[in-house]
Length: 495
Image 1: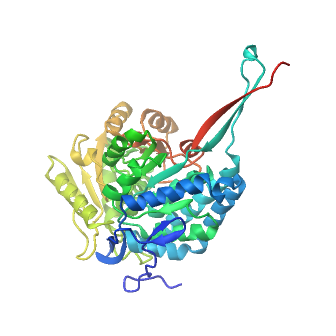
Image 2: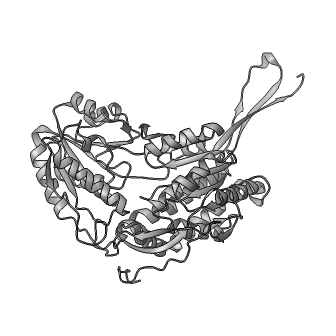
Image 3: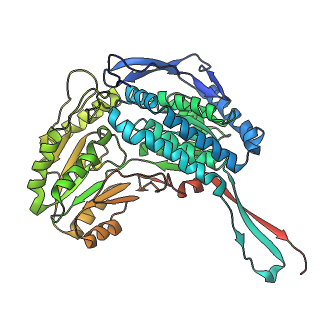
């Protein structure tokens, strides 16, 4: 297949909600605009859902959970549906990749190499778990009587899932995989900026054999559709990925119904480079850590701590590498960095660059401006001479902007790394494993990478400390958030 170009984008076919196995407009008839970030052009008008649409989706999910064929389906057959979905994602990989690029602005090479394969692997991983979610037999005290005690795991119920725009397909898979493996039903709200691949995968899920009502997708804004999901008394759990301020609102709005909540939130992740590290590899790791996906990564390595003795050498090599990075048409297979997802995000990134330029002592080493005249592209930007108390070092920018800070010794860097409200990820670059383990033990973060960055697997738990959220995505740990433990006591009578 010849790679698409901006003059020949993929066609958008699905723009409605998916409720109870049917495609339907929002009850109000209202729509929202979906954009191509590389051009700023409107590419589709998508249903803009409100409370009435969420009511319909929740009702369908509740009926499927309690009365439909899903409630009677064996765990192994649920797994077969997930296996089939994984196969369909792979079959339609190129179509999904191009649709993601069109609506998100990320480079096609990254989507083909990372996003789509990880989506398929996530569904396949949780398909394997479906018939292995088991309880325990409990050896209870026999002085109370002759009892057989056991536990079983049951689905939480109807799960409201609200996903972000930076990895639309993958965040959907991280939510759907464990929820469906445990036998729940879902009402998913994609980000209003990037709904298109969620709708196509919803169509593939129906083809994979998920009964009507098991998966429901309602498009819309967070303030309307998202808020309605959070407040709905028929929703038993909320899973949210996004900004901590939104998570705080969700926490308050879900309080009346005491929903189970899991949050995967933002970060200001530290990456530590010791003088004994392979500097060239550390530079490449820093490039991946902050510039991958245009810096629109919750665990982006936006605070780079470099030991004083190699600081200047590192910054020069980092600058050189950043300036060689190819920015532009995300459908071009040679492009390394695409566009920010929206005009709003583009403006936010540029505003933080201006803040950095105006903060005392910080030096903009390279970048610091938009790239080109069309679309929402930002040059890879590096600040040096940054202090840890500066706004660009403490506030999440969510763009291709890196702050480089100096450190003196182990105690100094661990203290600085932990001086943040976040705790999502961290990394260390060194040839000395004693130093590596000291960082891994000392930094309060949910993931620590040693001599690597942005490595992921569906089996490896992911989540954060502090304002980076609570609960874990991926791995067997994610199953805990989507299952209830029931304890059963059986009186066996006299022995």
